[in-house]
Length: 257
Image 1 (cartoon, rainbow, N blue to C red):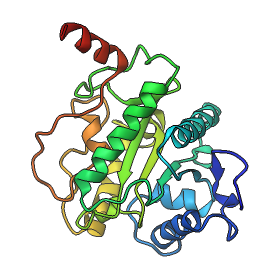
Image 2: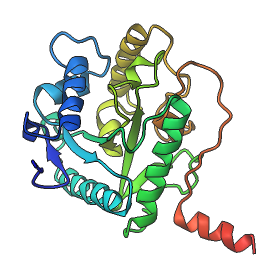
Image 3: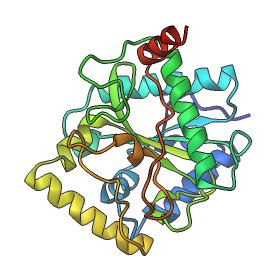
């Protein structure tokens, strides 16, 4: 049986000999990102064209599968620390889950699983939470962190019908990038605001509806976690983030007696 050489897989390593479901994910991405596709994120299209994507394929969500995911994410963080500031070394990470792990019939169910994944990764992460990142998901400076690096996590799933830009095929996928890259290319600066405006215009054309009202700029008062998993329409949101930083969880347990 064909096996990849490590938990972190380069796009060019995925061939016809790979497990069928892994190859299927690559073909799903190709149908959305390659050629004359009108997929709204030009950065994703560029990364796919240049074979910059990195993958972690999660076939089970038992202790072995979780360890595999954590190992791949740690490798990705270490790779990302070598970033030279250019797009050609800005490798996006695609974490793809087999349908035996999660196959749901609603966006909400996929999001609940996504937050379970992020919580599990945090709970086994040996690195401390960075001092300069907020612990409360509702704080403007909060971001998911792993191995000491702040990350942005995009939850995409096949239940999305209205929000087509968050549907990358038949599997649940987390697209992960270091937080700093968003600030470098599309942050709250004149050039960054222009880039985001252009992408959001493309999103609206692709989705056929206005972009999600929760989309904003990091550190400017919005809730970052809402952007991880978007609703399929533009309803107002009142949900609370299920994620708890270990220190906050410990404090809560102590106060409960």
